[in-house]
Amino acid sequence: MKSKVLAGFGVAAVAAATLTGCASGEAAASCTNEIKQPDATQVSVWAWYPAFEQVVDLFNETHDDVQVCWTNAGQGNDEYTKFSTSIESGSGAPDVIMLEAEVLSSFSIRDALVDLSEYGAADVQGDYTEGAWKDVSSGSAVYAIPVDGGPMGMLYRKDILDQYGITPPTTWDEFADAAQTLKDAGAPGVLADFPPNGRAYTQALFAQSGSVPFTYDSANPQEIGIEVNDQGAKDVLAYWEDLSAEGLVAVDEAFTADYNTMLVDGTYAIYVAAAWGPGYLQGLEGTDDSAEWRAAPVPQWDSANPVQINWGGSTFAVTSQAKDKEAAATVAKEIFGTEEAWKIGIEEAALFPLWKPILESDYFANLEYPFFGGQQINKEVFLPAAAGYSGFTFSPFQNYAYDQLQEEVTAVAVEGSKSSDQALDDLQATLEKYATDQGFTLE
Image (cartoon, one colour):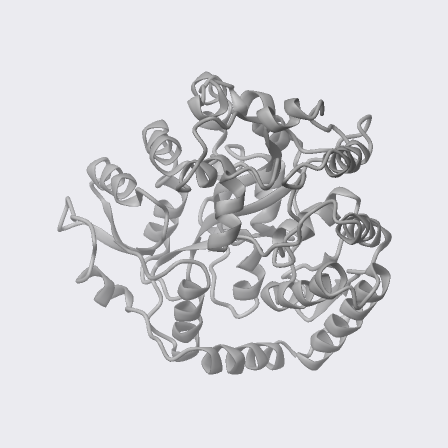
């Protein structure tokens, strides 16, 4: 059965791409960084982190026996397409690859990743939170080492909320009331945006209400449980359906030029964001110098029983094509395993660390952010969110599931052609059919 699943995914991958990557040996000849110890074992790495060359140089300067040869093979899906092509051809993959946590199952089911439990993963497990480790594990297998995460909070325009007498909402009921207050006052903008292409963002909001869309264990790769139309998901989508129908929130697609402009010009008074959101926001052009930004915890459904959620996060995985898997595992475990490396990641790349020695340090907790009025946003918002995040199980066809979710959310919030209940019931039927067509057995 597994071969049928792999074949189905393989055809899709080949149809999607004509690009090829560099084999491990070839990659060493095209490093974008300097090799400090030419006689040492070289490990090729694909990654797109900002300021990553500084991290690579630090690793190479402090390791005599192994050196990193780094290439930026593209960001997100661009890199994944190249990796898929190398899997199909049996060559061309790097030794170590940066992957978002949500796609690990999509590659592990194709036998493209090494189970790091055989290469000392347990030695570093204690350096990560329970939720971060769950995101890289499936059953007893560990398919990557966590790097950065996206615990969620709420970034808001203090000046706008103050102008209309609005206290930053702590619950979603208060959030809806605040949106109504802005509209009733004739404010030029809206409280927030509910992007139809939010995908992982939308899934995180569902999870906060108790939605568990997938059950999957790589030890039984032919079986999957699908329940994307559970009550938690339906309650959340109905909430945003009502807000969008009343014109209380925008439904603009995220991460477009227009969206970025509206983030900084006051069109949206609140930006519900992951921990990487402050860095994203500060990097946008046209920010109003008079704007007063602050951060607060993400609103809750039940303030007495808060549920923390995560949006995004990346890892380092060792590929099955790695020539020296032990050396590759060393790189995956250690490249972001020092305070020096993480200070680069935090200060130069605005990453949110999942490595507990820096995550729990006074340095990180006490960082003051001038953009947020000197607020210690890590201590006040994102560290508690990270500590409370319990992890998430993704499907082995997560990108397809996200594509279908986006279509259904668009039908509800933008087109108004479906109710939230009907959209999620349709999503359930679509994913069940896709899974069975790919050879999975539904639990």
